[in-house]
Length: 409
Image (cartoon, rainbow, N blue to C red; front, side, top):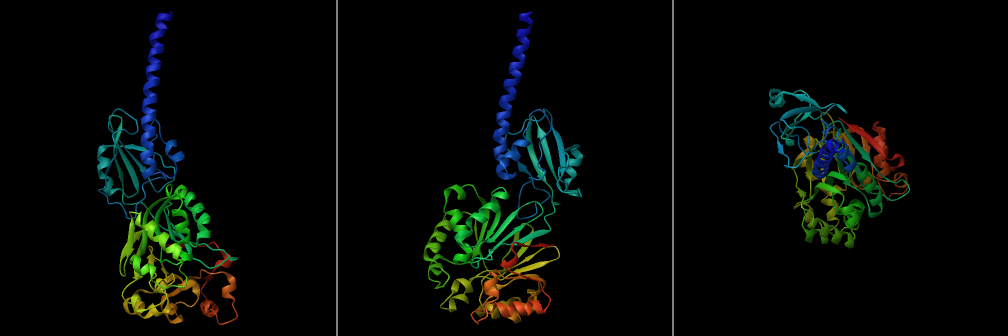
């Protein structure tokens, strides 16, 4: 009896051993997939299985700054998930949460270009995933834009943008003291930042970025695909003669950027795709900025328009009124938007004439606490701008009610 049982036990042991090896390979592959597709390691492991068809990207698909062309195919590494011995094809609707993985014919797989729904398809052969195909129909909008602030503190600029599939974009981020808040938001998005837009090099705009990138514990775990900055060299950064500059911040900023491979220096009229939104630059650091002696960092700050399917939001960051004639001359036909972020925190920035051209009937944002908005003296013109905006029936957002969130369609 024992002799008959031994071969059976040996067979079970061999089966378990083979399963263990395959599982280790799958776990190793999941690290690859985690880095490209999933939000967290826990989520990636949840879909690793060698005993069933549990391969799924639903909710964790590849993030991309541009819509993926229908011909896009990505070859997977040889050692990936062990699923089946034969070539099989699966698709999954990416616009429906927790949609099932559906097996389809080879013909259906090849007809993915004509598929009306967004989906991902998996081609398996000889126990290996050979191809992953992502269709062009993934809906990235609407987009959520959030203004962050602290009404009891000082003024700074910190916005986040997210789309329907959870991609995160950060605009500036505030001072060094805002680093913890910025990090908390990044962690909620799987430590992945699709794009970080740094409008200019003043402390209250780049401080949080510097504080996070200066620490190994955070810089090594945050994955930032793109960093957008104005077109400016290191010498001009150091000699911009801006009263909001901090020399230590500038040196740290230059050092950090020198180690980052994905820096994009934006010029006027550049257009880029930001998580499905079209971003067009109306102003950056140029020869006109160099004509001035002071506050070159502010004067060279990015001004850009974010355009969704049917709505727009104009970001004026910290650009000063001296740059207004150049922006109007080159882009007066493009200034109209549904929302606007007021320049220089809504104080001593662009004029009422400029904002009347923008219109921004759905909302205006001032990155400043209440005490500046209610300043009775003539130190700031913020109260005048605010009263003028409110008189036109336009919603006015500042740090009094943060976080302030809008949906851009």
